[in-house]
Length: 118
Image: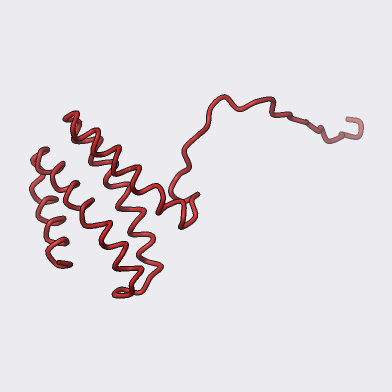
């Protein structure tokens, strides 16, 4: 065999066909906080359409983002309490979805968390 040589490939991106929604881990804190009301509204729309499973997923995603933000704050601080105020309605909405799906253990778990904070 003669002396092998490396091959070099050059790729050129011509276009992107569609935008994609960032995953939670790709977002900074401000983007996460800004996405919570949108997820809540999407969940509300799905709930009104009797699509309880998908509505629950939207609420769960919003809760996950809020919990990530709450981990950055000290419990009891003003910022943490503001995030908690956003979290409680989402917990109640998620509980309602779980109740419609007859997942009673989750309902008890989420509503108990609300009662602990109120």
